[in-house]
Length: 134
Length: 290
Image (cartoon, rainbow over the protein chains, first blue to last red):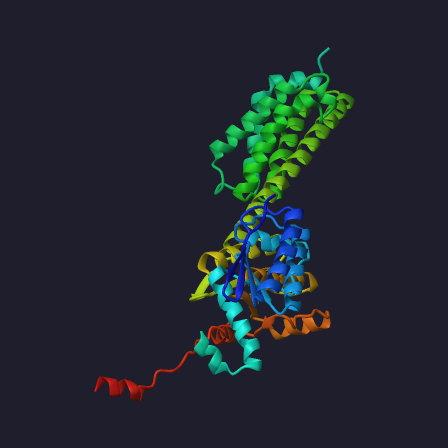
């Protein structure tokens, strides 16, 4: 059975969706990802959908779910590389993907994740310490 | 037995054409600037001969007969080309209706019996009337084609995406926003965001005459789509009247960054990018120069 790989990169998890998602695959991705976040204690999840040309309402909901679930586990989700046609479709379907952060490409997505986490850590830790770790 | 008037018309074909031409040329509204007299004569001759050739005992009673197809083809061709050349409907109407005068004039000269004359001219009148209706229909169709083409052109040229700074694009919207245009605007904006890798888009609506709930809906859609792509969208150029309408209609724009002018939107965009525009100080320059 096909499986979408989840890569670990420091404190983040990286998911690149290279195939068109069918419902079963998406559901598996959802549960795998949540387990992985729990296991690794990741602080951010980055989902690259630049190769996805079709997103239906089910997929939109799965993405929203992933964002909300990881949020509960104290990790932020960023969706990157959405194609214009996909964005238009989601809007026309009335799914603005609340709770999901988006960025134009992986680089920007990483930046966004870092800044989000820095912001959260800044509340509890000393900012300088964080920067020295970086 | 062949119909009286058909015989007359076939015999007097030349006469009819001459009379028709005289009628047309005598008209005040003749547009010599749009078509030369020779072209007009050629058009008229083609139409007259097609018409007289088609006339027979059956067709003379029915102006909508399928046998007139050829005549109608010629007529619609003339009508459409006239619509595109910028003739007024009146001028095109006179073109067809003056043929009726010519035909009736010939009939009057040839048929002496008043009852027959009345009967025949009634029939001719009906046929020409149905022709003129057809002409108007195609004339309007021709005009509509022109309008449609212009609409397409306007929607194509009116959505330029401007790159104002690194990672900042702007899109001035001019004219009314309907669903079709929103689609074009959205597509070109999102495409440009992808191509330039910009993360801030400014939608300037100073050129939008009115904002009703539908237009606002379209704007909100565009903003949401840009956000989904991972870029922030600022709406600028909101005039006081538009602000008033938006509030009166109860449209919620609080989730969208709105600015009154493009300048303030740009300033906000700079702030988001952590850029700052500063005035160069004279003294510093002098120090450097020294």
